[in-house]
Structure formats: C-alpha cells, structure tokens
Length: 255
Image (cartoon, rainbow, N blue to C red):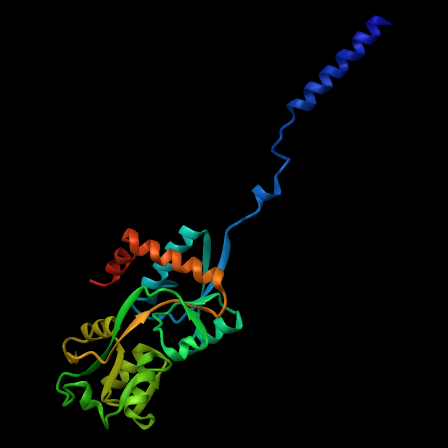
C-alpha cells in the first residue's frame, strides 16, 4: 500500500512539474496585446509646396513633418486625406476628418465653424506679376484681373478688396500661375514661399511685389468643442517650439 501510495504521489509530482513547465506565452493579457496607437484623419490639399505636396506617390512637406512629429510625441498615427482646399473645413465639421492642416490661415470667418490650435507659422500673401508689368504695388491691382486659389485667404481678401468681377479662381497653384503666364490674369496672389518657388522656376520672367499683400498666421483646424484633440495638438506645437524641432522642420524646406 505504501509503495502504491508513493507511486501515486510520484505520478502526481511529475504531472505537476509538467504543468509548471508549460509555456506561459499563450496566456495573454488583453491590455498588453491590444494596439493602443490610435489613428487620426488629417485632411489637406497637397498642392501647396513647401507645406504639403506630392513627391511621387508620397505626400510630404512642412505640415506633414510637423504632424508626424506630434504623432510620435503623443502616441497617434496620421492618415492623410488629400482633398480640395475648400472641402477641408466641411470635412472637419462633419467629422470625416479629425483635423485639417493645409497651410491654413486663422480668420474670423473660419473661427465661426472650427477651433484653431496655437499658431505654428507666420506667412505672407505675395503678389506675382510679369517682370515688365505696370503693377508696382498692391494699390495698382485696382481694376486688374487677379488670379487666386479658390478658398485661400488670397481669394477672400482680394474679392473683398477688388471686387468679384476682377477675380479669377483656380484649384491649383500651377493652374493659377499658368493663367498669369498666358496673360489671362494680370497678377497672381499666393503665399510667399509658394510664390518664391514659382518665380524661381521661371527664369526671371516674373517678379514678386516688394510690398506684402497680407500677413497671416497658420494653425490646425479642429472640430468645434473637440477639446481632447485641440489640447493634444497645442501641447505638441508648444513642445516643438520649445525644443527647436519646429524651427528645424521649417528650415529643412525653407532656406
């Protein structure tokens, strides 16, 4: 009986050891296995170098680098939705996008529909004219045909200043500049860094007026009341300003 009992105890000990030696990797803590990285949708209009533009199949630029840096800091990934510029704010308002970042100027009209983050860049609206143009200052634009990008602040300001009848709207910078080259418009209003790039590509046939048309602030548009995303983006922008990363990204694209 003792032998039988000892034998039975030995069997139980062996089974116990086998059970203890089984791998524990199959027992997973759901909170550890779950992917905690969230994806936010950013809408933009990738026709605005150096802030956002296509390089092959990829969208790159100042805004893209900034938001990806904030994403790494705050633990989110970004899905970029390339749409028409005048559709970006409606996309945020409807919830199709979490935020819009497209070299977007903070204006009173836009503030009625969306909230804006802290400013991350100051920009200038510039006027491009042919080298031999009689237009020498912003005042000379009165009565002239002016090309703008639809929905941009250049469009809003110029329509108010010079009248609807003098405005020609385009959806792409290249289309607006081509209209200037072909003589369909007398001047083309666009953000300064875009203007510099367009003039540089065309061998001195065009020039930028010395006087700026307008100075404005760029920020990220967020759905009204979405304090969680607004605060997170503000924290990211402030941290990038403090550690010099924001200035580094801007200098990467703007010499």
